[in-house]
Image (tube, rainbow, N blue to C red; front, side, top):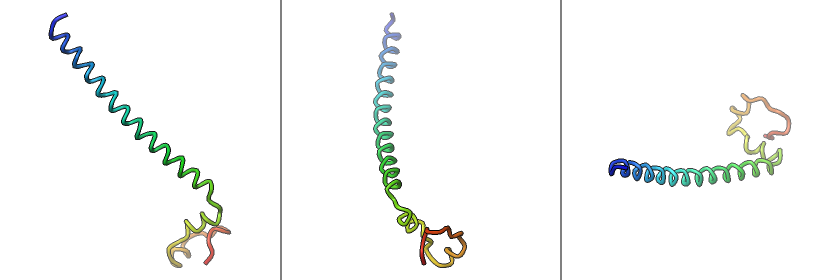
Length: 76
C-alpha cells in the first residue's frame, strides 16, 4: 500500500467518524421531536369536547357567523 492510499483510507475513516457524530446528533433531535409529539398527542387525548371547543372558538362574532356551528363546540 502506498502512502497516498493510506492517507486516503485515513481520510475516509475520519469522514465516516464525522458522519456518525452528525448522525448521533440527528438522532437526538429526532428523539426530542418524538417526545414533543407524544406530549401533544397525550394532551389532545386528554382534552374534553368543551376544552377543544374553547380552543377552537372564533375570535369575534363576525368570524363565528361565517363558520358552521356544530353542536357543543362553543357557546356565545
